[in-house]
Length: 93
Length: 328
Image 1 (cartoon, each protein chain N blue to C red):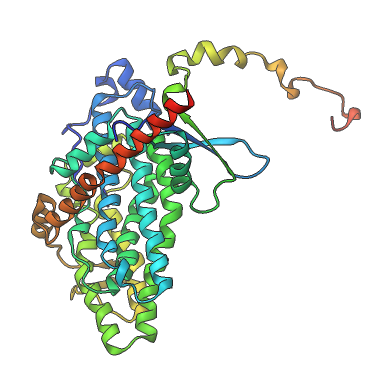
Image 2 (tube, rainbow over the protein chains, first blue to last red):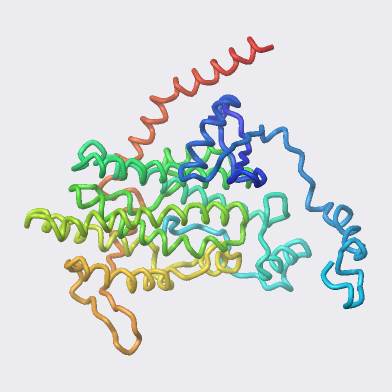
């Protein structure tokens, strides 16, 4: 199967939800990747839609970049609703 | 257990203080139950051991289709045939989930499959026993998949993310396998002729001990366990899982109205556990070394499937290239 590239598989489990990564398949081309993904990942009503993406086309962030990428959002507490204390009289907001 | 005797390459556990900074960080992450993901740093031995364990697990799923495939054309009714076919397709699926988890570690699928075919990689000892009668389809679902579930449920919490996620999918599907197997046996025992009932007992007699062997050697003969447990790619000892399996299985055996081929099997009121006789470890090691009743036949069937299917894979590549060329 060395000649069959790897595809990452994303399934939408229900209408209204996001496609979610479920795993990968090897296939000769994109349409075969969809067929293989259907056989492998949706044998029991797991999905209503499938995306396949050549694994080589995915760019991922590196775990080493975790701090520069995600730390800046940690210290911005004012981005959360709970930061703003309001008097009780305002009620639910 | 679908993965038996997985070599870790380490006989002595390192303490946190003996580890370099990267390894220490890695081990602390595992201690904190934080999953290791493909791009995280990991010790070479962890990667190699996992590739060995996951590939062995995947090979077991794939080879495990063969004993059941033997009865597809001989199933007693269309309904049973469809059920068996669905179960076998699930096993193929489980193999593929696992191969894809293994590939996230940088292993090459073709290379690992070559290792299976030339005897360098192992698969579970249980699939080297022949399936001689229809009741074997029931017994395999009940005992073999039952033992696999006991082994796989804790692996849903294993430290390597892609392996744990594959196990979650597998476990969801396994309970169908076990129930369909047990129902085959129950139907034969409750509605069957004397011959059919005898068939069930004969099948249990043949698969009982090999099922107990699935969990691997006893704890004092498991030199790799300590490292595997520290890495949390194994979460309970072989003997512990074997006992858990036995405790849940004996009442089901009694409900069937059958017996185990073990005169020493008895319930211990004080411990609340079943006690069992001596396992024939010589048989286990013989089967693992390739000298079980069906080892050669299984590998031969795998090889011929790969070799005789080569033209299909090549044709698919040629067709994909042609379509791409036309579209361009």
